[in-house]
Length: 332
Image (cartoon, rainbow, N blue to C red; front, side):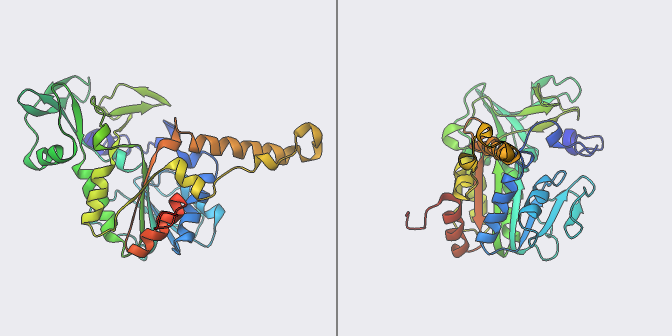
């Protein structure tokens, strides 16, 4: 997976872009960016840093919602067309890397569909314990290899067990390290992951490794021709964030978060098109906004994504909880 995505001829090294192969929330109009801007402002944060910023769609939408926010993106791709005042770092964030100057405080750090493309090893359960799944990068043919190393085996016992014979799992230890690195790098702010996830009580027995190309899901082959991705063990991430010094996490679905941040359509206030022809363009815009909100909050689609928010202080945690759930710390 590392070679296929980030090797010399890897998917992302060639300048590929996830949005060209599957639809993501920042591509669905501007509502998602408006929600991120509202979250930052509600927390009293003046900067937004996006890790894995792609072509900058989210940063564009945030800027359109609130031009006063300072923005910076990090991605392997060259700087896209962004507002001139926005910053950009071409490269790959790794645990321990310093954040861009000024973005280690008073910042909302966003990792939108970034953790799922941090490479993982796949293991398969056998009668003699888990074994690494080895793959031919050109044909995709698989065979079982040696047991995972001691650290990965310990992670599996803690976060993905019991592993039955024939069951598959992805070792998320590298993702935990990347997340902890982000959380630990922000001295005054919030780190937010938005991704498709699972928890220990509902791990997929067949694993979740998948590949996408041209808006179609295909058989995963590690030849660099497709975007390889796997769901994220969000409970392991949250524990890693706690170890990095964060208060307890805020965990909500995207549907809940967007509605709590008042991302909702005003289409109900629009007059019927037939009754008010002069307002037809406004009505059409409202109908489009309604469709965007429905897509972003649908529980059989983008709305079921998980928002994991970990703050640097208890006060920011309480504010984030209120903003993302609509409830105060005392539950009201």
